[in-house]
Length: 247
Length: 205
Ligand SMILES: [Fe+3]
Image (tube, rainbow over all chains, first blue to last red):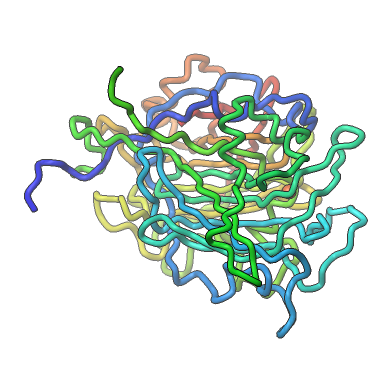
């Protein structure tokens, strides 16, 4: 096929800081001394930002995308509501992002993390570790199986609780796309009360972090499905700019 | 009416929280047997070319206290200035170098350590050289959007003075916050200050 279109090689769209949380959000108390006071220095992407590490499927073990059993004793499985979380990683142009590494972590069904600094009274589940990972296919699709995490209290205000959530860390194709976020569950009454969610002031941006129940993809008599799409920064496709990669 | 642009919007960031270790460095926090090793724990091997260096430091909050639940990632070019990335079109980077490292702060002291090599020179958009530098990305409880910064090298005074990114910083008094301190042969310290008088320069990239 003949085309005079060159490969995409421009910088990434500027991060829309209006949709992102502010750094200083005093109702989330830890942010008060951990937020920069000075303005970020804007910089156009250089090669250092438009490149990034890539992780091949060879790093994945057979159970990496199955938190229900990846820490469990043989023949056992984690306690809790069985769910499948699936969706696509897209860029802002709407294209699927292939070969994207997703690392996920969460509390167990009772809201307790497996971590030395965790002090919540809820019981540990001996068969639940709380970490999983997967890599998107050629269309940007991913899926993993887990149990639905519980809500948990945390020391912030006198009575603050986190809604049920799964933490997500994503690598796109560029270090400029690096993102850590959280997925919430449709219908959770704790969502509007969460100081961490309220670090985002744009309601649409909050809605985009809430996964709907996906009854169509639910496995009957086994596990409910939740669909969660994630959008990473898009890249300029204009061909008339400096070719940083020399192509 | 006009056509719609149909662009999506980047998902909003949320803090990595205090238990980022579970997902990103599970072996470090005692969750063993799920992954054989923590990703990013080693960047070099016996065959990696270039000058070996060690970078250590702390991430410090507005009260002067080091963060003990921080996680840092670095991304850098190899000794020739090539990135070990799929979209590196200028040549093949050293296959014995990952370019990417990840390190949690120590639970007690907050200190991080990276064993790596000194990066080569990477061109800016206009083809002029940037001084050797390493990109840092910092996440932790209380940080709502991961922070990007760079470490430059103190012995590269001439290159640093000509660096186009450092040159963009209006308040020259802040530039030293981006330059590591040499503490020995191949040993550097790079503390990142989140807030206050000596606040590190962070970039909106
Ligand atoms: Fe959490």
